Image 1 (cartoon, rainbow, N blue to C red):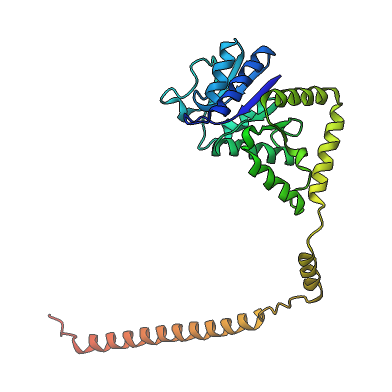
Image 2: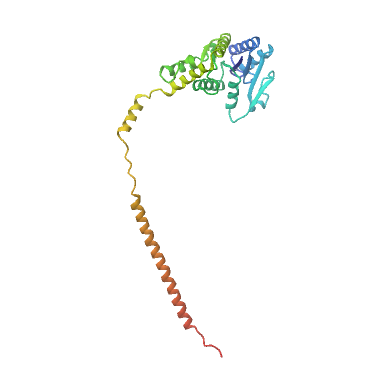
Length: 280
């Protein structure tokens, strides 16, 4: 099983978080699971990769090229995938694609981005995340605020499914890993068409949510009070423009002919006045 792990890469990470990450690295190596992560050498990522490598575990690191400038990757990672791009989109895509499940430990905004991107993709059936379990390791209540926000969204009718449909929560890495292993194993036993039907039901439910009352009222109002649009009288305007154009053209050509005639007469007159007698 390939286990994707998200977490902090800060040197100032709390010791309790480092301990859980170190324990997870050991468990992954002992059970023969592949550890997939962002290849960091500090914080949760550093503790995870150090423990896994010390137990001769397999690690796959996915890192953005901007972090390779000062050897930002963990030195013990042999399988390192370097990606590019103007942001971290491609990196996240590769992390999701290389994992059968996702474990999320405490982290900063980068970890939050990965977590919410995974949950959003799972809910929409994108990035092949529909069948991949996501588990938050809520060490010391770190994610209590995020979980309360999700629950509030569900209670207010904004979240289409129960919170558990999007993300599972455990308080330690041992239970989180056991839950992920069970979910992955169960998903492999279920026929693919069953998974597809589940995804179709989720998408259909998302698309068939009734509109709130104010929107329905506005729609009825628009139906019964159509907006009348008065089109301009194109024919009349065109005729007027044509008439003006003709008058303008006639005046122009008349003036031109008159000027030419006057010019010819003046020329003939001057020719007669200035004519010199011929020399014999």
